[in-house]
Length: 316
Image: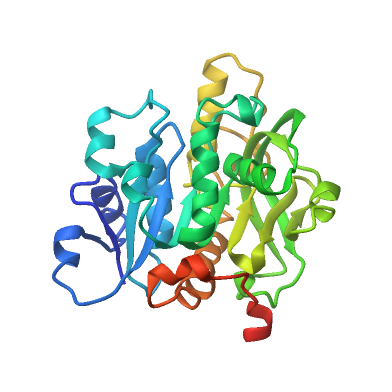
């Protein structure tokens, strides 16, 4: 089934060229189907690119998904037009009384600031708390993962001596866990960050569980509340040339940046990237939507506020 997105969103034409089936709101309204409702808080600077990356993953499954985009009220985007935001995005005031089956909160280019120094920390903290009572399952990506683990569990982030940049091999600790059904013994995730979290702090948090790790990039995927929240330190949603674009951008600015690891063919930037993460990226999002959203969300969405932790290992 297709993903249902706002009419005239630029991602529609981009994804149609990739033969990905997306549906406008007008057409979806003609169908008598109860779609899964997913809210995306897009904190990335190039919002159209992130919209496209996430819709690409959400569309590759048999469920119809209705997507709403959320913007912050206490932050003004410098790289996306106000017209685009007003046309396609909602504010927290618009959605705070509503309920969603799933939510995705993206990374943001603020990782070198202390969390409470981020200008919109108060608002995003309120959104984190709201999601716990208004969303069945939430995916936090990159900076959002660090921020949410700090907010809920006091997990600190630490500046790395050099940027974690490239595509890194990960392993799963329990392949029977539904999020990883169909995964190989090893899989790859792109990373692009200047900070990290520490394994020992997560293990001693009392509420977090490490699901996947990498010898090179560290903690990969963390869970809390049985799957009500997942924290992804990397970017399984990245398109093939996203790391290349970041590398070229920083190199042209004269910033200290190394060639992304395990990315270009023969580690040569003159060659195209070797895409080795998209298959597992699709499977990760499909499994999340199926096992932790579709199969767990109540028919009466207002009952989400009464949900406790999930326990899928005993259910399945």
